[in-house]
Length: 81
Image (cartoon, rainbow, N blue to C red; front, side, top):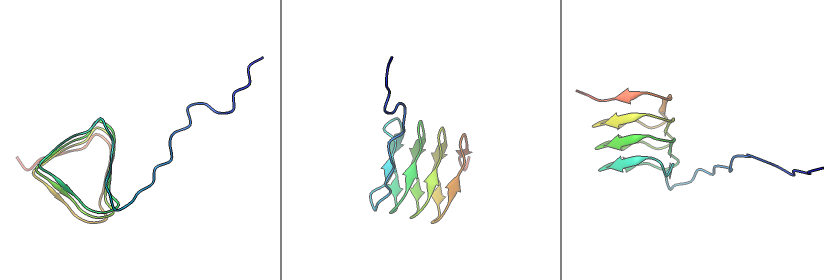
């Protein structure tokens, strides 16, 4: 018999003044406010993400200013052109 205390429990996220950016993201020439979170597999270029905003998984953001308290759903592409 095998006893398992826990398995596949996700790590607790703790937002802070430092942005929480998943290691799988590609970031270039961008700024992030306090308490921001960027999900998995995102690509962000020449953009600004305001305080208390988050971007979910698989998003592409180019040349955009994301305001404070914004929430971007998964699989969204933001590009002015």
